[in-house]
Length: 295
Image 1 (cartoon, helix red, strand yellow):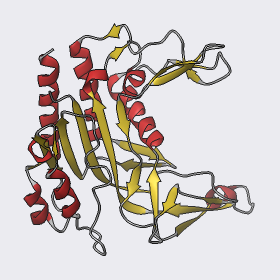
Image 2 (tube, helix red, strand yellow):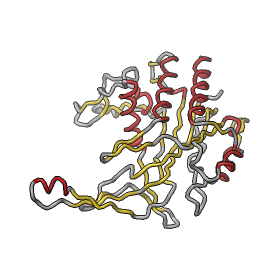
Image 3 (cartoon, one colour):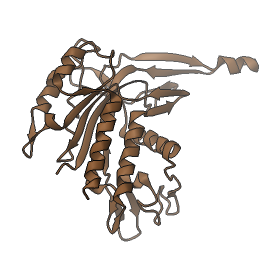
């Protein structure tokens, strides 16, 4: 039985996640590869933060589920997945004196969003000259690392664990609705950072509903070496050829594409069923209805 959803997204963004920094330099979160390239990333925690923020704005997700009564910021003891979509999707831990902790692992797994283009150490020089001039004093100086790039991340959802926690099992209609709400958020995802609102909506998305909860295309989506806007279709094609439990990955996979972004669109079209981004999410919603309608 097909019971899990997994997809990998490409979007374009600018300077999405800053770390601690040094002196007056705000440093982007980044890591080094063996070939010497440096790539920036937006952490999975930052993506979760914006998903929950939009969940509250769009669907009134309950955010009043946290306190510090035990000295540690965590979810309230009395709150359950009935009260919180966030706890249902992303799991929780509640510490208990002398008895360890109550844990529920995430039913929705999100990877870091990693840049597909290397970081070239660009800096933006900033001052607060406008404010300083008002009071006739010297301006403060700052430097921000900047990186405009395509980014990729992967989401994997285990249908069987949504809305189920111990003795709690939510109605199937509510379980399906929560997954659909998450998909709606992913479709229009954005990030608010340093006075900007970055659009994290998919330019390319590949995935489907499978028999196992596996991030098939994680680490398999990249750009061709030396070409900024050509997708490396070879890696993707090799994944599509795989079989799992007697079923070919390609047979369960769709590809959503915004036209005019990648220079090798004709090559991408050879991978399989190409649809619009809207059609991609519509197909997923239909498969969610089929899964929960069978229960």
